[in-house]
Image (cartoon, rainbow, N blue to C red; front, top):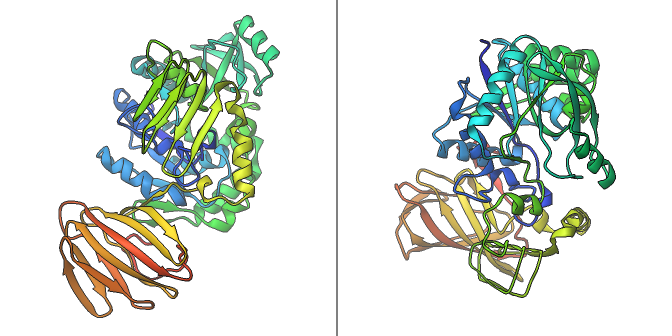
Length: 466
């Protein structure tokens, strides 16, 4: 049997779950209904499947976040970095080029889906492995349970070996078309999960979209290794057309078969989709965090940082974070995209960043900001080190709250313990390191006329950042 190599696509932004999911902290990195994030749950799902080490595809901004979540699972896997977002067809092409020497069966899975029946998933993958090993392109269709307008559909009726021959694809339909698809009985939701040999995908891409294949081959030829990451030639990849695997290959391929996948699947594509799959109380409310709800029914309420109280609310989505609150009727969650467009037009930072910002060395929380000052709470992981750097327009004052800090200030190296502090003037080279085995926590007060993150000149960085 041809071995399986999972390909995890983790490059999406998931803005339909704003304000939890943001450009630089997308939904696949969130733990929405459990201890594991969606990415970690996707990787854990492979536990019942014999497979080669997975390939993870993500973007530059998320690379250290992805690496940290792999580390938490005790996994070490190649992370392929897309120089820019070009949709799923090029992302899969890079993975197929990386894997083609062994020519395994690629099991392509988005990192942000939920599957509750692990045994059914493993059984479907075993069927797909046999079909893909024989040269088929395999897609998985979800038996629909409602006339859903948020998913694409696959029409598949005629048996084709162990699977079904695909007739045609249907774009996200209107309500009447979705109801007709459900009544017909031969339409399935498009899961976005695929299996095929690396060589079979590259051959199909070369047949139907040679422009995408050639651009990806050029980008692959210019690849370089960087820590756990594999980088590709940026100029060549940016020249690649942006196209989904469905449009580029699947809708055109003659050797495509579909396998039904009835495994409790959801793409968690909206707040209502999350409410659908979540545990609820006797009044159909899903409450996460510090929530007090009186007389409510059918609500999804998520409190991230403080008490959220509601009285008499029905069928609402209420999501609170440290810097934003969303309130929307469940029936209108589709309009969040218009809200996201407004945030983008106004260049609001809440679209891209949470108040908590994650870095390879740890994280920081922007506690307060005013005229000529910014206050951060910084946490440095054991062994973590901020780059040797200086600032042209701001000074910094650090106060150690917990742990031990090793501080480089100019040509001096000092050791600070709890309740000790240090001042870093404008223009002085400095670095901060945690030499201990417990997290280092400190308060940083920045002062100056310009306090943006781009006022950093790096001289040395253990994580390879420029």
